[in-house]
Amino acid sequence: MLKRLLNEVFLFTLWNSTQLTYYLCMTSFDTYEKNLEKRLTEIKHGDRAYELNGDAIMETLAYEASDSIETEKMRVLDVGCGLGFVALKMAQWPDSEVVGIDPSEKAIELAKKQHVGINNLSFYAQSAQEFANNISETNQPLFNRAVINMVLHSISDTEVVGILESLKKVLLPHGSLSIVVPDDMWLVQKLVEKARVAGMSQEEMDVWGRKLMMQESVDLAVSIHGHEVYEDPITVYNRTLKDYGNLLNQTGYGMDMFVSSPDTPNDRTVIPIPYWEFSDHYAGANLRLRDRRILLTQVK
Image 1: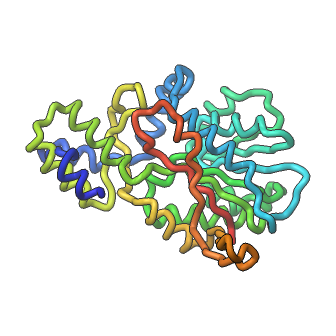
Image 2: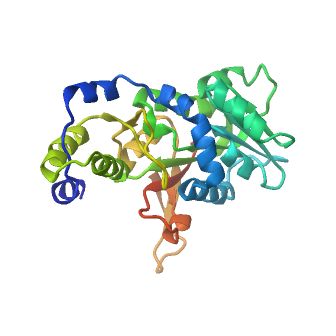
Image 3: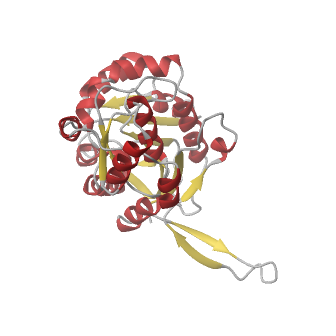
């Protein structure tokens, strides 16, 4: 499917070597921090895809495994919470306590200023690994849920594994994890947008796109729906949903799907799967493409 689309519609070219070198030397974190104020303005003016991410995540919070531990309150950890607006939405859940963490002190400072006076919402400038190592020192109880919203696509496999392993230390047994990731065509779409802005010919586009899609990751300046392209690039890892499933299996996450036939309804077969996909919100969404996926999994 991907190769066919690359042959038929994904037609780009390679820019000159000076421009490409500039893109490959920047880091995602630097770009992320540099654009926080701009991102805040975008969210306040409305970002439909971001809003839908929050809505779909809220739907996954209702899920609770039959063997999960019952608690008086639902505690949710938002990993890579950024400016805290998804965390704010989750804090509206009855009897919830929401904690947002982000390695950027600047992001957490802005989040705290934006969401003052909400008793069940708190923020910490820490990575997932730091938070997991410090949770016992801060006397915080473990969490029922964790959320990672559009973070994993911009970090390496090693870093993804590190985050997932850390979350196992802060989640209760069989606690659930909701992950928002780009689908298999998200990077293609972003490259198409960039090539069109650059005014590339189809022949030029073809060379550029084919080369980049063969790489493990691409450094690319991206745009948010309805907004201008960011000046500096982020690193986007060229993963499929199957790749994310493999990383979840590798780190001890997954769910059991029970299958039975109408003739023998009591004779059920258990099929282990790495995640369950929630897509109801995107089925009726007024977006150009359903370019993100909401994956629900749990600690095994």
